Length: 208
Image 1: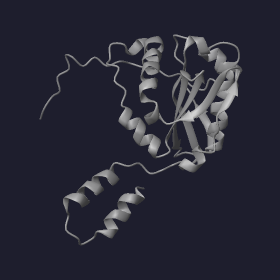
Image 2 (image 1 turned 60 degrees about the horizontal axis):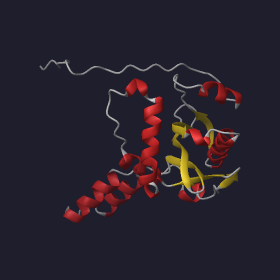
Image 3 (image 1 turned 180 degrees about the vertical axis):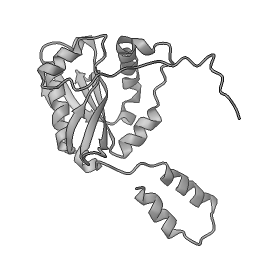
């Protein structure tokens, strides 16, 4: 429920619709209901491991840094979609982040961004508990040494616990060997996902 929109409508019942009120209504209508408060996210502090720093950061603050990382991830793991345009919707990331429904965790070394894990948070309609669903989990090759990757995943898991999540869902692409890595960390293979890229160039829709 969009409580902000409801409150705005109640406060202005019977009043003329001014341009300013219309703008406020449009902004409120586009906002998502907050799921996890910023104060809860703020409880998650950075951790250090063998020269790496793990932390939560806001995507709006590091947009210029994270775009090349997103591109590297796309190039390495999304081969099956390379005939589609690579065009991330950063405005939507920001909307979900402001609503406490998107959390970005980063891995740095000497200040350089080498990896990230983005999690979407939502409440299950089946259990009414919070589920964390991985959107992106990617480390550059220079960060895949020692136990950095497993320690980073442990950091992500603890962060999700702090935010009230009871389960984590991740996807593993067939082009890499990450499935074995995650099974060693206690993740179970519970389903198989299939993808089909739809060809639309020659499709003609029938009109009534």
